[in-house]
Image 1 (cartoon, rainbow, N blue to C red):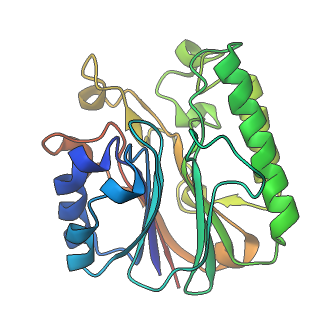
Image 2 (spheres, rainbow, N blue to C red; image 1 turned 180 degrees about the vertical axis):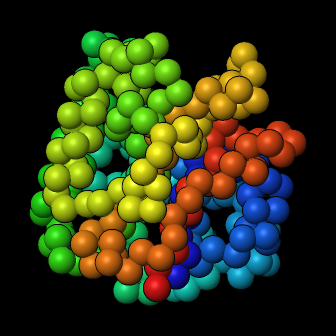
Length: 255
């Protein structure tokens, strides 16, 4: 099974790019973040023509997540189980081919110490509780998406420049580490130990051309899936296409 994640920064604006990539790579599952549209306005038809069913959890203008799948999605969950602020469409989960796929868009946090930063840390705490309450570490669970955190120095083009700033502050990294401690392994790091591989580059200042990026989009897997992980990589090509997202796909294949 081939599973990918991609923050598309508006599915309506980026649909041609996503369709082009799907036709080329043909993943079994593509998890999208920052779709920025309601479920009713999600452009399903183009994806359905390529053989993908669409499960979406969206809102106008901001946030939004979706799962595109060639196989049937079962037990679809939108948001955390408890009553959640409807303005934050940030989690969707489904079982596909025996794998529980949890697609997340972690809050950005705006700036360290801000109210939005506190919300980010609280959201990550709730995410850890979500896994504690609903899954076992020996289940076939995969969590992927835009985590909005670069975990290590090797995930940042200039660690000294970014240290202590949003996306790379210690409180964020500690909060994300608590989620990982549930029993997850970073699929990309199973296959690549070197630094210099990124999934996001700022639109400004020619960051992509210089490879001044951060690895903030991830695919994490439970132990049974880690054992079956055959390949994991970041596909930089779409970031160089016309009208790209500022993120690029992260892909993992399983035996």
